[in-house]
Length: 139
Image 1 (tube, one colour):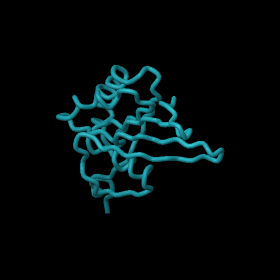
Image 2: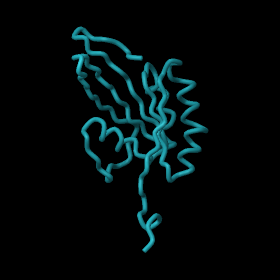
Image 3: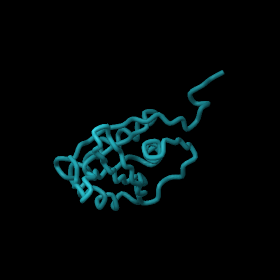
Image 4: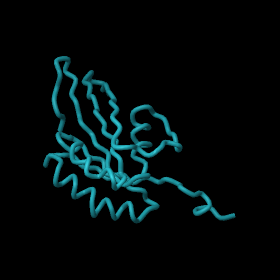
């Protein structure tokens, strides 16, 4: 589902990324928008907004309006305002964190079901983020 079309035929798609703090939502966003990876990205405060225009072979274009939301519990009440009118919800968890997956099941999926449009496309991304290499690699 695309939200609308402007005068130039550019379709807009509103995307929101949700999940616990530290699961890599900002890294996923940076990879998609700028094709970069920075493992020193600081936690998002409230939300970050970026856009990405993609042009396809058939000359059609889509503008992605991307909201990278904060996963910290103290900011969760703000999330509801970002769900309005979204086309795509990307739910992210850290595959090395059972707690981040449980919060996806127990909180984030419910938020999307309750506050996002019923026809929102939902995708679950698992991310692998090595917080502590020594935990995974023994010599």
